[in-house]
Length: 430
Image 1 (cartoon, rainbow, N blue to C red):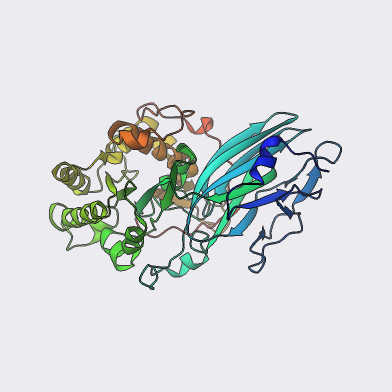
Image 2 (cartoon, rainbow, N blue to C red):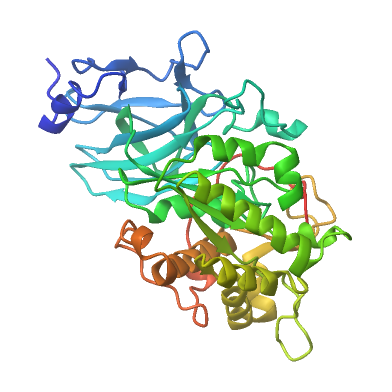
């Protein structure tokens, strides 16, 4: 009989409705579903590996403990109803070392650089959100054509395992009905960007919350404004899910400022107040987040304001409505100026000609972020949470140092396993 650690045996008797998977080619643990490298996803089975990366199933010691690994990032997907879920992973093996980063759905960062030494297995937990476009009244969110292929609208929970040497031995999923949900609303600077080399702070921030207590539901989408977020029924979707005690982060401006009939202190502020009132009517907690600066330096090396009065209008609205404000606009100015005109290029999507496939002319994008830039901005949002949302701050992980935007981590200090999905097409919005 296969010998499993005690905690694995206990997990097998877990909660009703939980799904448990035992990876590898060896004997299956009691209460688990065996997943071999040949188990490809199909909708009838409801789980399996996604095609693309060859997966190897290995034994650790005397064929007692097995796991799967691959030489490149690989994906495992499970059909799940909409909701929040706790996930427990067994990583590593009893013979060699491992190094694993875990993302879910559209590259949403959950576990960062988990390393196990020889003969060591570790259990790691995370809390994830699964959603569909379905509305309570029977309608649907009006998705853009490209969104129909996105992994966060498909009724599945998709895991991306990457890193220098990812090793996955077991996986358990169970519903979490008690977690507080943090809803994110906004545009391309917040959304879970589906493809490298683009990223946004919303897909980095789940990594900073304690599992079991907080689930992040990122409903932001590229190109959206306060007005279009309403028209596409995205706001209706969020409000249909908000429960008392949940948080709703609201960050819009980049696309709103392009609307000629939307004055910052009048219509824009009026829409913000409507969003605030809607959240409060559901018993939720609204949090306003000012939009970060675009990368535009003057001759003296200072950031120029390209957002007009929109950040100030949000600050004023927060004061009038007594809503917590995370001033990402102010912190991003400090951040970009601290990095300077040259180093800050690394925080945005800048590639010279001939480097990125599909873009022979290169990319010079001063609005959308690299993984590095998105991570820095997420750290700034965490700083803001600690300063103005103390109840939520109690649920932040303790293993990350607070950022000083005037002295940020440099590019050479940042290492995050890249995802294999690449599309150099620029996201909507500017």
